[in-house]
Length: 230
Ligand SMILES: [Zn+2]
Image (cartoon, rainbow, N blue to C red):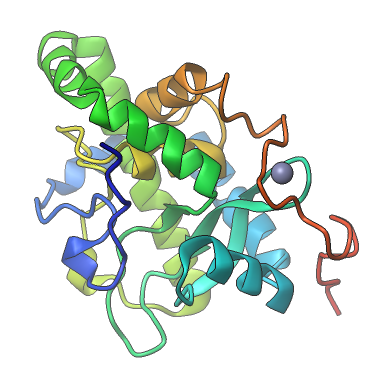
């Protein structure tokens, strides 16, 4: 049974969005150097905002319009969007915690299979017994919040309603592997230990470095697809 990815229509029901509030000290897990790197990544993404072609591609991938999409956060080698970055507040003001969202149908399917195999229960147990993993997972949560805050500051979005809420069940539980995978794709390896693990596990069917897209990117090239800064 393949579970469809939850739709990000309402803030608290979105891809792994968790109502659990987290103590502010969690952000202490993220050092100054890491914060600077996150800020650089956000700046890089905002320097190449989503083009109409990319928005249209994601619309086709999801079967609905990607509200609040500010940039493609990761691409297949062919150029297709794999995960998108969504602003902390949608255009109508709706708070949106799931900043990194997996859109590639191939990736979504591969990750859904893992979830259907019941791997999340095992990982939740592991989180309860492996202090190092739990610590790395809390750090991933802190980095997720730092990423969204950097976005919010630059876009002038209010995070008041989603303070301390990340995605995927972080920081204490594993509830949505799609959200964790999206974070790994957007923020890079070494940020989310479980998102990285998912990518290793699905590599034979989904790999950002190997195009297996049913519909490879056909429009403009990767370079041409970028909007030049004026
Ligand atoms: Zn591709």
